[in-house]
Length: 344
Image 1 (cartoon, rainbow, N blue to C red):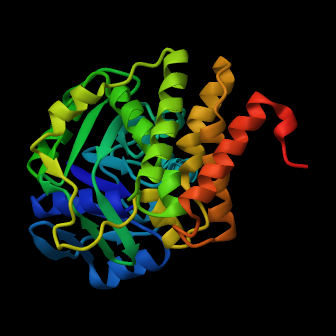
Image 2: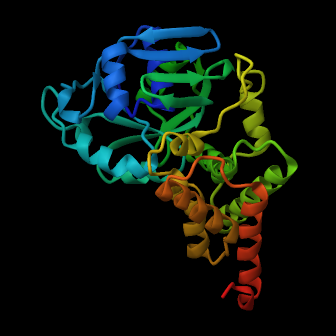
Image 3: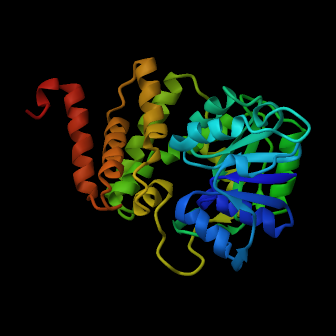
């Protein structure tokens, strides 16, 4: 099997680099300065066991790859970029006849739960992957992964449900590449659990790494609101104890080089000045479900709005205080309870 990593950033670059280290064929797909750096200098992957450079095939568009029936497409762009990527790759021809959407498996290695639905509109064989993988991508050509002793935990299964031989083969390749990759028939249970924790990404993006009780308290509020909404929607979520059982003793997130922890995926988008952020598919997913099921979501609404304003205005990551953000949330809650509290 050859892996086409569509979006070789923090997650995609780490998965691609680790697969390459284990001897698997990998093609990286990237854009702009990152593509140029990968093409000219290779992928520099820093992990707990050191830094290595992988000189792999790299392209910046779908028609630059000759696809074969043994290829696996791994979609690891941010969800806001999924539609464009899926459109680019779906119609690409595969050796022997047919198109990528008809013949190739596509694995959504992303936060959120929307990309699988987007992919299934175009691709016949879609797989969800719950990405529990602490990784950073801040400069072209370089990614780092701080998980140890394993690099990450990557649950995989068919979407909307089930397992098959392809999922088992991908899992085996990943487990030979320093990941734990359980094959599960209910992968979306795991992805909704990850979504719940990712609701705090917007807080980190706006205020920096959650290092004090005020930030942690706000994170608890947004996640609690998310759990209420998911319950109202009848969506089953993997429990905390179930998650701990899988991950305990298998992966730690402490930076292996003694440095301060950097921010997660949303923080990194702001730090790189991409102009977009994934909040519409994290906090926005809860807002959508809340509206569909009649549950107010003032905390998630506020964080979605603030995160989008940071991306749109290219405000520096972490430039708002927790107190300022909490005040905005409290105002939204107060207005919901008494509309007369709205500012003139």
